[in-house]
Length: 203
Image (tube, rainbow, N blue to C red):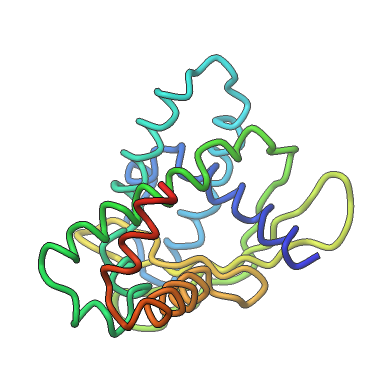
């Protein structure tokens, strides 16, 4: 059940990537605007998911562009690499961020086709620091069953919000990825190059 919930939430995350996020970020207090941002984003995403006349090449192009435009990929990448970021060379960091982006695209780009009418409702928003907020939401399934709790950690940069983590039923997707990467690195002598090799093979 936990795996299914994570998968469904992942589908919704993909949906959100196919929208004009930056244009929706509205002026307002850090306490109010984030919830509106996620709600408007979700409404637009539902319509975007129904499009079926797009090639995979175009889908990948849109996904990658919007990923970079509206998720703070570098911040996420640094976090998931953890303490090994400091140990990595400049070239290893650059390659890691590129491979990490490819991994996200490869993992999620086709999942939107399995979307089956889930919708999102925001339940509350809280500020955690001057430029960070967490938006709590529920993903509701038309087929029934309990809703999936998803929290979105947003960071305000230059007047626009960027998503830096998604937490499904209290479990951080960033933290989960960080643990997986750390395990791979430890099995490869504590060297980042071991993880890079694995990511190259997987991608």
